[in-house]
Image (cartoon, rainbow, N blue to C red; front, side, top):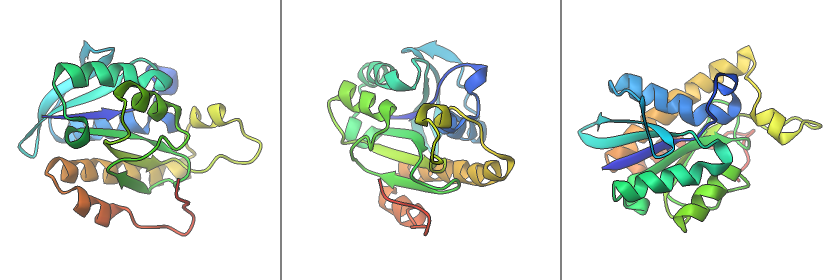
Length: 195
């Protein structure tokens, strides 16, 4: 069984903001695979189903971004998830341009507070993640205000492409094709920097 967690903040005011691309990617996966993410459990909304013949739990933490680890830890413990091979976390990355994604098998939080909290609660950096590009913070902007802002119409088109890529990448990863997914989607763009 796999646990796929998409990070975001609950509440209508945060819907489709930069910080909520994890939620948005889960919605695409859920719609594509007829999974309803509507059960309240583990300080989250969860949906159980099957993707490509693999049993999955899709999880949207309701703890707000910076406490995402509480929810993921509860679900991982309950379902006896092997963190290294059965957990995938999807989240926003300001170091990637909209439309681009990065897949990693492990790594640091890279300054992302939600990821810091997850790593702290799990006691490990050794789990798969999909970073979805939301664009670099303009000079003079407060980071918190920026990640809680909505995309421009132009950005939204690129971001939607990135969300679809992220959902497709997760499906490949669930089939054990993590290296293939990395080869397919970790293409460097001239505007992107590595975090």
